[in-house]
Image (cartoon, rainbow, N blue to C red; front, top):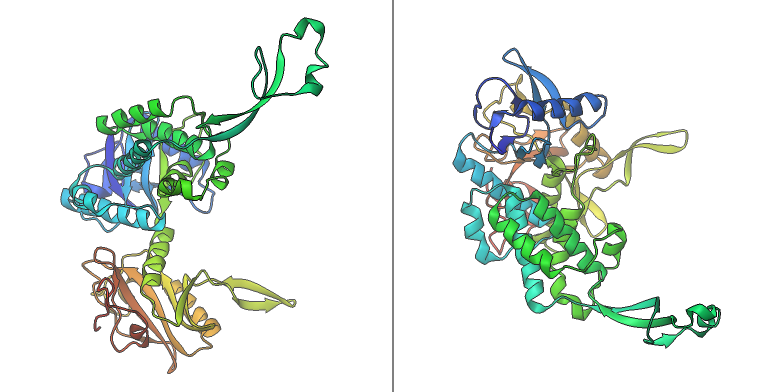
Length: 442
């Protein structure tokens, strides 16, 4: 069996038949039973990551809406890609690139332009690319020198060092007078940043399968030898220094956060501690689009994420059922546009009343409520879906009323722009001088 399996969202895993591209992959029996056990132990949970289904008369496990890498106890790594990939190797590389770009932007991790071309054409799994970049960031720190600081140390020693703690010393019995209670400042690399880096290096070495990454991780761990692991990751991150002498450490903090605060949709059963590096695709798409749009907003507009100032109803003098649009664009303090992202593949060719472009009716209801509560029933609201070959231009305007209009628009992840019809009022609030985000006629 292969040690790495690539599949996309909502694809299936099974032990029968042959792989048929990114929608079905074959795993070994040990991996399959382990994954099935996860399904059975979490089948009643609201946000299930895996689901038992039937395909061609055989029981299969369907992955849901998380992307990233999962490792089974049998050693098989399962790479889950966003469902914008087609079933060929060229699109796998393209999808890995898009996922890496979204992760780097959302997690605020830097990526040197000189590495862009090399990493874009690579066929390495996303986890290996991320580890490769992290290790190179650590190497840059090592070349400039690992920072140390003074730590106050209190100990019993056989020789005088620093300050003698007289009160403790006089309480010692005569037989121990040759031992000194001393206090001194020790200049040591044992500080929060280095503890976190070493912990992240250990995890990277355990995760990586490539000889290049493993070799570099071992070399760097040797450099950090003597520095303990982080015993309290949250506390050490809070102590990460932002002083001027630590400026060259700054770019490494998001990488450590990404690796040490790994995303997992479930608690792994048993004692297995393999890779569980997974991200909910809906949230990743929402955050990415919000960050990109914020960069191009013109004054005096600003973008507010996850606004929740409005509620669907009042009951017993309280507000019930908060309404939380993904993005709210305000002109000063007045809401002027509502945007909601949906990580779904709609089809502009399915324009009949039955298919409705594959747009969910619940999404339409949701946007209707947003428009009435945040815009007082007047203005323009937007449903943003990922662009793909069957949805590459905005749909014709939907009218909730003569004063409230809905636009369904695509966001192009490859070229990083939102396709907004020129007839739409919101097309005038972005600064398109950088030509990275453009408006096109619908």
